[in-house]
Amino acid sequence: VYKGINGFAVQSLATDPTFNEGQVWYNNASYAFKVASVTTAGAWATSGNMNNGSYNPAALVGGLQTAAIAGGGDTGAPAYSSVKTESYNGTSWSPVANMNTARSAGTGVGTQTSAIIFGAYPPGNAPATESWNGSSWTTLPATLAAPAERSGASGTQTAALAFSYYNRPADNSPTTVYSWSGSLWSTLPAAMNTGRYGASGVGTQTSALAIGGISGGQSSATESYNGATWSSVSPVNTARGFAGASGTQSLATFFGGNPGSPTAATELWNGTSWTSSTNMSTARGGIGSSGAQGSSGLAYGGGSYLTATEEWTGPGAQQIKTITTS
Image (cartoon, rainbow, N blue to C red):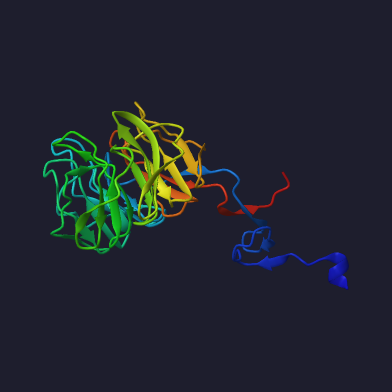
């Protein structure tokens, strides 16, 4: 009867509870009333700087916002490529074991403890694929049939796609797509609709999204792959290549890039169309990126050998707010 008339008492807790939207409690350690809610707009937040600034470090498709690796990149003269690898723990970057082959504009697929990196800017033209086990890199006998530079990608360490790349000797961007089995690369029968390079990719080997890129000029093309064919879908609002991306085929974030000059633009994909959202703090292209969820992402490096790192929290993400009188 008392509860029916007066309602429930607010809980007094020493730590914040498991998230339950709309829940209110009193944190007796911080002496504050709290409420669980979700964000209504996306936001970028500055995080710890990388140790080595680089342009075109390998994006880690499939990595997490709080657990990523950055491999190689253009770190300036004289080599314009690097073997350096750094690991991100959600707060700071730490140097880890170097790659075996220096490269810039390579592509990474997998997680912080299980990944591959392939393709790159010369020298070497078509460097072998390297595998990462969380502590060291191993050079594999598998090499892409074409010297793929700044390729888009999707998938995991054992099942991946490589697409939208620059074939430097031939000076073209084929629509050819390559499939990775965990031990070798093979040409996929399904070609893309628009040949371009510098595209960003998210998703899996059978459910992928290829975003933007460069095709003569900056491209706004977006293509979706269902495991058998590529379909052209709604284009991005700002055409650009060398951008970052996070998420899945049905919920993705696309950010930064070089539409003639570096941009901070951020766009959200809901599975049907793109919507402009909150800009990054630092405009830049040649970004490294990570994030397997549409509501979170990570941007690092790019620009003029930047070390800056930013974390993305998209709309609908869980958050805990302190209740005030204002």
